[in-house]
Image 1 (cartoon, rainbow, N blue to C red):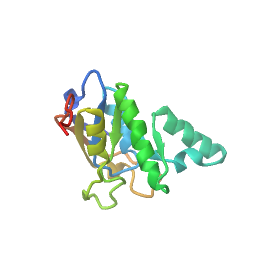
Image 2: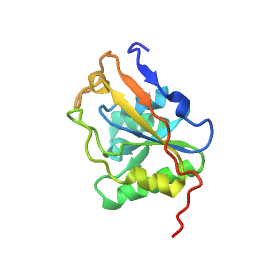
Image 3: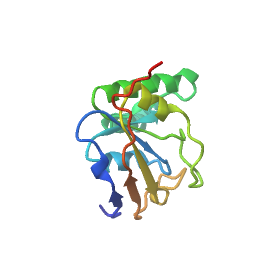
Image 4: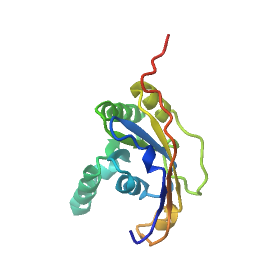
Length: 171
């Protein structure tokens, strides 16, 4: 609330059924911001390391990520991303919202890079609509590799969903 975000397009979030949020990724806080702003819960991937750290800090991080419905992904295993995508697919099929960053990681310079095929696979596998989201200014809230959070304005713009609900290949 202190940051006074500019938010548009939340009317595009379906009131029921599974959906996929595909967003650019500028800050560690992006998932938390989308989850806090969207009218329905959205679960995101999170690095498995966030769930496996030891000590009080590790337990706190695990609790934090679990409380937001984050899905751990082991980025060191090639099959880790595939396993995590199947997990997101099950969540979508059960009527939940999931979020995915098509680039697979945060942009360090604010530019949009080539996306990976996870969003397309998830949309085709589930038939769920994809809501494109553009974030602007979130890297000013928390800079890459910094633990410091600053009060800054930012923008969240949700576009019209593209969807394949009901679509089935004729092959």
